[in-house]
Length: 114
Ligand SMILES: [Zn+2]
Image: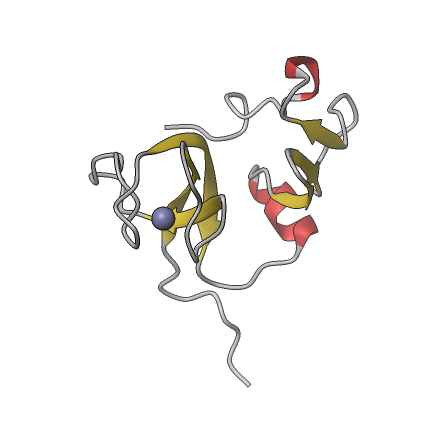
């Protein structure tokens, strides 16, 4: 069995929120875009106005949370509306990121370099 891990690519995932009525994609939806893509101003499905909430980083090859932590990535898993669990949290980081509480925001800048 070959190890998955060759040729993996890192693709940013952006989360958008409908500013008005949500469509079949839901109030919030995630879009994987290349780094050079421009940010969306309208929903790809319904064309309604959207705003970008946050940027996440996704890796195509499956990795365990501890692998990601060792690689210096932060992985966020949505647990509830506006609440993300930082499954790669290190000692001084808050385990949960509540979008309404800036002090719980993970320290992304120190982890994702370049
Ligand atoms: Zn829509």
